[in-house]
Length: 265
Image (cartoon, rainbow, N blue to C red):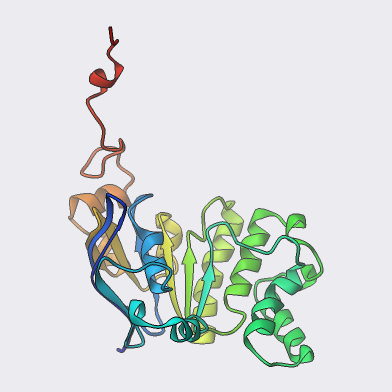
């Protein structure tokens, strides 16, 4: 099976904070791949490398065989046309209607006539159950409906790759289940490749073909859903079973508690 993305020994730091410490992974074409880990482990940072927003301090990301950080502005622009993105907070244009939010990438990146754009927008909205909301403004939608519109916009141009950054965060159980099923259904129907970045275990297990678990800046474990659920790795077991004690610390690295709390004379 051919790979759409190859990540080799990827390192990246925000100033003195080292986030990625040698990530290695591959994203096969046509699959739904989950990237999991605790908040702050570098999942969203990894996505920004896929899209070329960040440059690695060492290592590389290849998209369709091209090293992303070596592309010039024109090449990077053309590469991004093959990608769709659903942001953590939906990222809808607040002063545009639902219809215009979806029409925007089609108007910007294609020469399609407006009559064709109209049909494509309504088709995408129908796929997420919101064709009747096309004239509403984002502020008139619930949080779950905004996520569905964001999902429809991410697939508006039928990209080769769709990236979902925390698509389940803050959703009620019904909306969450709808979004999870849509990701799976749309990936298979459109023949795209999907990356789901999340810390929501049960939702991601419903849709993914393969999982990567990031801990301490590296891929600590990987495998199919069943392989991960049966993993004996302590950090994977703690994360998947939501256990408070284990190698994944709750407290951010700091001085001893009593040392910080002592009264200074």
